[in-house]
Length: 319
Image 1 (tube, helix red, strand yellow):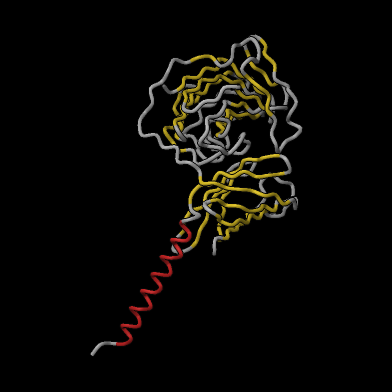
Image 2 (image 1 turned 90 degrees about the vertical axis):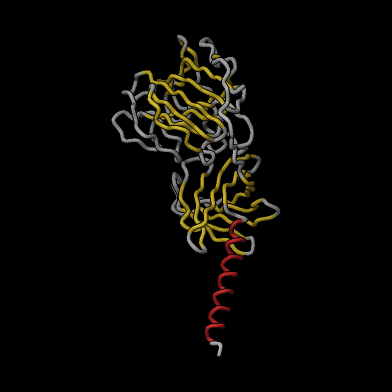
């Protein structure tokens, strides 16, 4: 004689399994990385979101706003194509959480962000490209992108989230590109896909700058002598990748970066030592020029965080 309770149990487990499978299938439509554009009046501000599966039925993730580093999201809610999450403020003076809501429509996330200061802005997210390269590129000859005489080939660029950082403070003296005080960022007029970049820099005590690869991924520059490796210190890809070691020199001494970027895979040498080897950059970092990761972009230097100097800037591009 068949056991009716056994049959009921089997049916219950089957239904539960199908329910979890359907739920996970629904979640998969939102899992992954999203390149976001925030609209604030007539300004477009880049942002980034990653949503990951966690355990049987929950979602978590990471978020990058117009400024600051990647921040963890403990739980992302997603049901009936509606998504929401909240995270505490980072550099905002207010104490209110950032709350984010969106609806998944035709492969895009369309929603609003209620910022810690109470301002509500609209945003749209599209799936980020993988940028996978199957073969190692061959490289052309390095060419100078700074002539050591003037700022030809470079242009001043402000930040949408920092209107005051629009003043041109950049000058050239004795073959050195200098930002003697906080002001605007500066970028190349040319844009690049995959490249090998060499740049020498000198950072004063307590100052802060960065090299933005394609204008989107910041290789951090800080006065980090004697500090432990960190994604927010010299040699790190800001908020994402921590270097293996930190061979920083004392402030006021010339230092060098040799950075290779292929797709979203980066190798970084600081002062001749490889500190990041073929690591993946997940997404844009705070202060990026845009979130259009599939496009070529400039080399940009940060000038809104304190004095900084650069020299001997060359680039080799993939053939």
